[in-house]
Length: 376
View 1: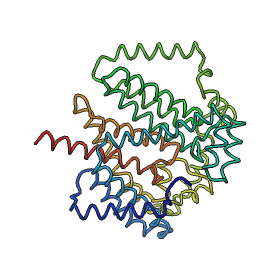
View 2: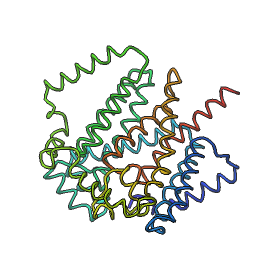
View 3: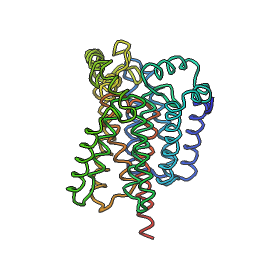
View 4: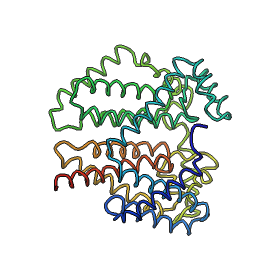
């Protein structure tokens, strides 16, 4: 209701990005060239899959989002891109807190803006399972936005010199993490804790004081009571209500999917058809999903540029005495996708990959702008 028709918006944005690239005679290089080259190869391999036309149509979405993300990253600096992402995430954060603290306002103002088919499920989950959706129809999407916001705030906090702003970013991080708890998503919660912990120790300064502070914080939480953390009770209830672990039966679907892989081992069932291999169940693992959709050869082609990008970002981060915001943000976002793809299909969702593309390409273009400025 509040967004443009994606079937019209994205093709138009794609045509604009191609037109702008041709008009400016853009020269492809670095990460942009690598991703595009492997994307073209992956597009070609779709013809050999079990369902080529479905695979091609789904692969086209990745190509469209990649081109639009490249246009945005090329002509917009990383600081602006991260600010826009943070603003978007804060809006979703507010919606979650309205749902938690002001349920009547949520039901009368925000819920009617969501598709009607989702209303009954959202109301049931928030009433009986303390699971909150915010301004989405899937808690997994809400949690993903919360992790995006937390990472951007963490990078800003590491580089902020003004104490007031640094404290504001730290408060936002806590609110985003709590938002994940309210969405009762265990995977994103564990993933963001790992990334924030890594970011906390990702410094060349002495780590002893940081270790000591972390231990004190953990002891404080244990004394205070973990279940007293806002939203934590919903997570604990979910553990007891479901399988008691983060897998929640996913491994059974993964086994079925991997068994079916051998029907089309080289080029797969076709992009977007992972559910067929999982017996109709969602294959919530990007690595297995890519394997059964694209086959062994196609999966290698699909992941090759992302492995190269991760290695390059890590090296860039280590070379600089103080890595730039774009380099750190890109690396932490890539870490998020690597971790979350074990329990969800982050790499297999073209829209989530749009954010991924923007972050890794903004790293490249920001570094180019920085080098050009220093050269001048």
